[in-house]
Image (cartoon, rainbow, N blue to C red):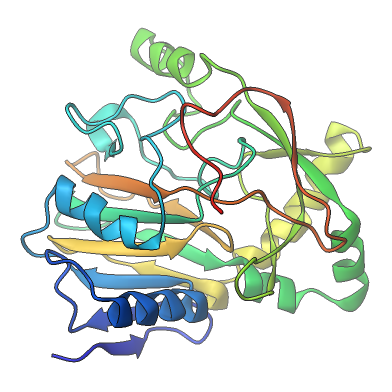
Length: 297
């Protein structure tokens, strides 16, 4: 079969057919998928027969892969694979871009369904490029000048209600290395030149503003990201893989499945250092993530 790409929504998402993810991609297919990812921001594949090794091999067509996470444990025997498991308290029911608290967050994220609940458990993926385009001129001009500090004080893998020993232990693991990194609020995509709002759950403060002032501005900008027309709502089926551009999207795992088993495996592609509108790069305040990721060329 030749590759077929079917657009899912106006602003984000496409379903890809005609690609066997269990086999190596030729250069033409790899290039076509990169172009599709640039255009649609999120791609959905059938992944029958794909295992952890195959997922990693597929993702490597897009660049070097990271280890599973800077602080959270990987799948046993697979140091580059992160289990996103309801039994581990990892329901990411808040909006975020993966690992933005490090200098060079992943450029792309892949999620593969292992166990899906009979209902609920969708993953929402939002286009931050569409959000930026939606901004009024005056607000867009302000956003272009802002920088935000991102930190791992909060993580999708750790519930906010740290009320028991197990949750506290997960929290301690996640913050065992503290990261603080400053990124542009508006990031310029290195391949397409598009501008997108680079914020999400790890962005905690605008440089030069108080915590209260920062929260008001971040909430205002975030409201544009999460407009329904900017969102792909993906309902998982068994043996699927979703690949999304982590540089210009946010995502959210909907916790609406009554605690039933839900497990995905995540593999991420090493990213470049974000660049803002004026050409300046992000910078680190605290935390060394060299054990987690290389810097993409």
